[in-house]
Image 1: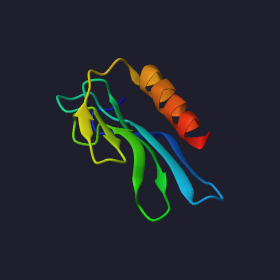
Image 2: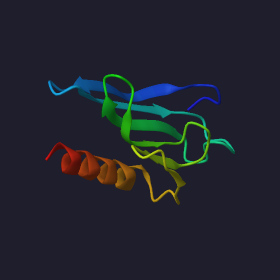
Image 3: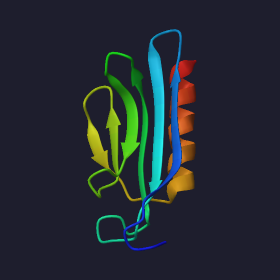
Length: 96
C-alpha cells in the first residue's frame, strides 16, 4: 500500500425496525505509530437518535470499547477478527 493510500474495506449500515442501527466502517490505512496494524475501524450498534449500546473503535489510535452506561474501556488489541467476533456476539445478545 502506498504510504498515503487509504482504502475502504467495509462500510455497512443496517437499520432495524425497532429503532436500532448498526454501522461498521473499516479502513486499510498506512501502518504508522497511531495505526500500527494498518487498520482503522469503528463497529457501532446503537439507536437512531444517537445513543450508543456498544461500540469498538480505534479512531484515536487507542483501542476502545464504549457502552450504553458511558463506560469507555481501553483494551489490548487481539486482532481485528477477534474484535469483530466479540462485537457480533454482543449485538446478537442485545438483539435477543
